[in-house]
Amino acid sequence: MIKNIIFDLGNVIVKNPNIDVVRQFFKDENDAQAFNEYIFKSDFWKMMDLGKISNIEVADIISEKKLINVKNYTEVEEFLLNWFKKCSVNADIMDLGKELKKHGYNIYILSNMAKETFKFFSSKYDFFDMADGIVISANEGIKKPDKKIFEILLNRYSLKPQESLLIDDDDTNKTLEVANCIGINGRRVKANDLKDIKLLLQENNIKF
Image (cartoon, rainbow, N blue to C red):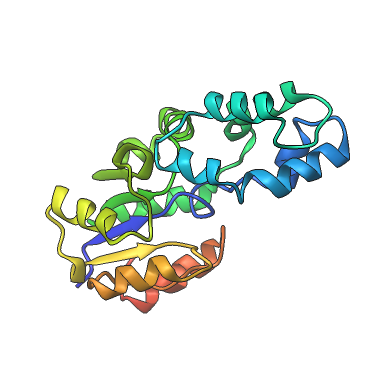
């Protein structure tokens, strides 16, 4: 029987940044495209998720070394310090989480996210206050799909994997493969898709 619902954040609760978000910080379209192509695939993005480097440190390195061909590096800094303020959330999915809580399920958050980003969202939405436990990659120095971050969640909150369901949109399926391997239930859900999340819950006989 499922007792614990584990929510990912990116593209489940929070919509991940994309070119439309990037464009809000760059006046020149070519600069926006160049930055968008670079930043999300860079090691810097992974390092921020691991808590090894701050947003402002990334901005400083990119500007100092001229790592991207843009006209105004101030715009790079503005993005890195403020992009999360321009990202919308899936309020309907947060409301679903609250309903699950009312039905007696324990709610947990397990996400790859930078410290500054998590601080912003967790201070703004009561969904985070409602959670029974939260594990964020930047605070642990480990990110999904590393098996260790799942073990941190399970051990810290005394969860049984077979009683837990993971809601995650990981398009590589590596996160779900690791979770399933250690006994956590779940399959990949479509990004930002309330309907598919509800279907996953129904597949696991969860009432909401």
